[in-house]
Image (tube, rainbow, N blue to C red; front, top):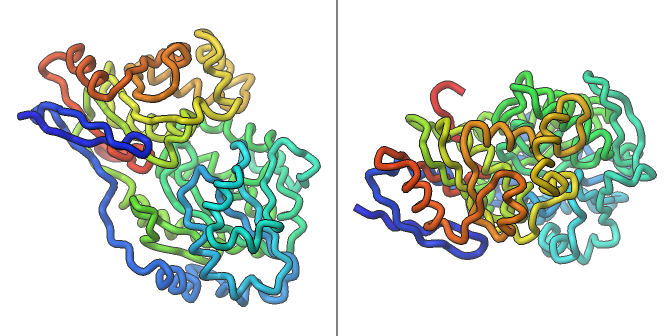
Length: 418
C-alpha cells in the first residue's frame, strides 16, 4: 500500500508517495504540552534552579548586558523581555546579539528577535562582530590553552543576563546557556580554536560529560565570573511555544534543562535504515551550514552503504565563508579534512564529517543550491524529494528500509545505548 506524506520544504510542503511496507519509521518531534507562556516564564523566574531571583541578582548594578540569540535560533526573546521588563528598567542596558561567526542579522531579523520591544531598545542593540578585535578583551585561557577573547561590553558590564533556548547541537551537545558566551560573543580565533575540538569522539549531540567543546564553554563562563551571570533558558515546542523555562545560575540552568531536553529531542529507533530522509525546518534551513545539524543527526540512523537524503531549501546558499570555501573545488573538502587535525581552519571539522559520511554512505540533497556546487562535496542534488526517493529505492532494491526524520535538526535518533 502506498502512503502519502507531506514533507516540509521552506514555507511549503512537498507531497510524496512511499510503499508503506518499506517504512522503518517516521519520526516526528516529540509531542508535548505547552501551556501559558507568561505563566511558565514567571514561575521560572520566581523559582530559580540555583541562586537568587532575578531582581535580587541585578540589585543595584548599573551596567546590565543582555545577551540574545541571533536569527539562526528559534528563541522567543520577545516573550522573555516582556516577563523581565520591570526588573531591567532603570538600569544602563545594552543588548548584545550573539552571532558567533554567523553573519549579522538584518533589520527585519532584529525586529523578529525583539518583537514589540525593538523600537524601544533599538538604540541599545549591539551586534557582536567576532572579527573586530577592538570589541574584545582577553580574560584568560581554557584548560586546552585557548585564549578567551570576549566582547568588551560584557566583560566591563556589572551583570550579565543570557536569554536562550535548549536544543540538541551536533558537537556541543546542546545549544543555549554557556554557548551564548562561546562562541556567541567571543573572538574569531577563540571560536576557531574551540571548534577544532569538534573532531573529538565525545563532541556529539546530547553529550556534555567529557565533551571538550562544552568544557571550553564552561571555562569561558568561569573566566567571566559565573556569579555575574544569570541565565534564562527555554525548551520550545514545534510551533515555537514555550514548553518549559528555567532561570538562575549559568551552567546549572543548562544541566537542569538537559535532563528534560534529552527525553524530548532523542528518538529511540529499533535499527538503522538503508535510506534516511532528514528534513531541516525553519529556521535551520536558512543555509547548508545550518542544515548540517539535520545531516549529522540523520547519519546516526544510517546503515553503512546507505543513502542520506537531506531536505532543506537553503535560500541563503552555503552559509558563512568559513564553510562555503569547502565547496570551491572538488579537492577542497578532502584537503580541508586532511588538514583538520594539524592545520585547522574554522569549518574544517565540517569537511572531515562530510568526508567520513561519504566513506560510509552517500549524501543526496533536495535543495535550491545548484547541483554544480553540491558536486564538489560529493553531494548529488535532486529537484524533488520524490525523484530522490525513487532513485534511492531503485538502487537499494526490494529489501530496502526507509526512515524519515520530519525535523532532523531537532531530533537525535538513538539506536541502542547512546
